Length: 316
Image 1 (cartoon, rainbow, N blue to C red):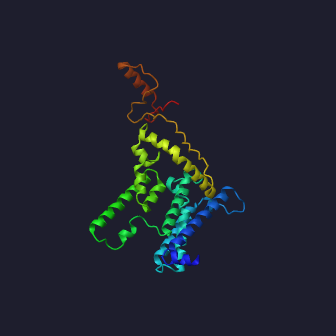
Image 2: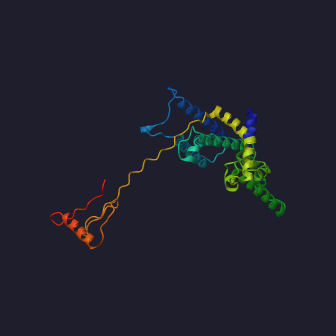
Image 3: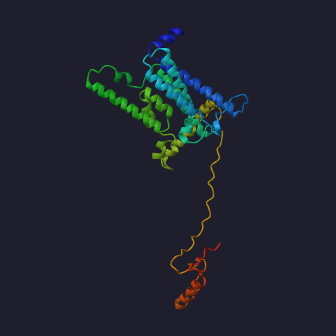
């Protein structure tokens, strides 16, 4: 085992990546054990960090660890010593804390134990899969060919670049169609992403919202295919995730908007000496010169000593 580790990890320059991978997995498992203990209200467990009543999420500590490990990794020149191992492990531990609250960053609200909080577990699983593939020596399609010696002819080089671009476009379309794992796998294995890009999109994905209008035949086919093939796989995936990360079954209550304040009718304006305006709720029967004379009498009778005019406010 030690000989395999030296041959396939140390001598290939993958020791920092291996340290990142181990610390990432360990950090995710550790924080999930912690939050499940907090949710179960275990008395002897430390619990949440609340200085002054402020709940500090562990994503804050993750960002600090990532900054510390990332800057240290940039400063360290030796790529096989213990210093770079510690820096990579620190960065991986912080990345696990950050991705474990990916849903909080995405929705800008605490949805950790809700259905939306499953996005955090999905993000962690994707990161583990990608790091594991890179750790085994698998590289994205076209990586070694484009970085190696120049091809013998420009025609071969142009064809290779075209194949890489088509494969990358297929991966992007697959991701837009909601096929996360197929799109990621297609980056490493050619043709898979292209086939996934041609097939129907997952209902609710950005591609389906853009190109499958309500009542269309494509949307009907996508829904039937989703119920028949994808839903059983999703249910099995959720069972595995719940064993590791706990159940995301919390239902948040929708915030209730405060009642609007009652509208008050604006009072009439004073200052022109013509008295108060008539209440719109009271129908006026005055007309002609007689009405003008009566209005003048009302304005004169409401005058206060000193020339100040009393303005009649709105009725309540």
